Amino acid sequence: MSYKLDMQINYGNNEQYRIQFRELCNMQSTVDPSLNDLELDEETLDEQDFDMAAASKTMDYIWGLTKYNPLFKAIYRMAAAIMISENEEIGLAIMISYDYLDVFHACFCEFMRNPANFDEKNATYLAVLERFTKLGYNRK
Image 1: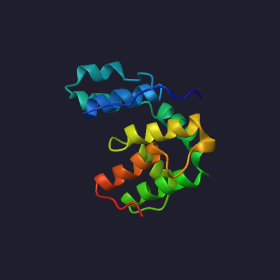
Image 2 (image 1 turned 30 degrees about the vertical axis):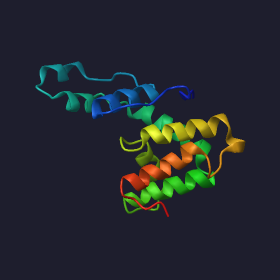
Image 3 (image 1 turned 45 degrees about the horizontal axis):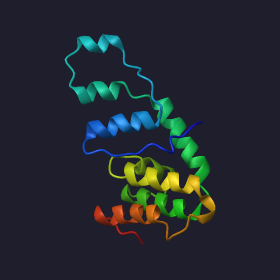
């Protein structure tokens, strides 16, 4: 799988997030043409066009590379706790959500570029922790 390490993730609304997430996951349009005859709002139509296989492939790729890294495990546990869970895979799903994708993507890319020097002082890792704090979640 090829992951877009050079992609800059910047969004200010849900529509922009969805566009960037689809690009990051290399999603293909799968919308059923018959849906065009229905009166659906843009967001509902967009949800019908979600390529779950592409999203799963991207998540599996990230998970396979990070599931044993103690810093990512800490991130996943903190994120899972938001959903009252300890399941680290749920944590990954949260990290690619609207609230976290931008900082998580930067953190993952930094890890991929320089894993030997990726530590708890890394600015992108600290940005993820700061986002938890900003959104009201304790990072301990």
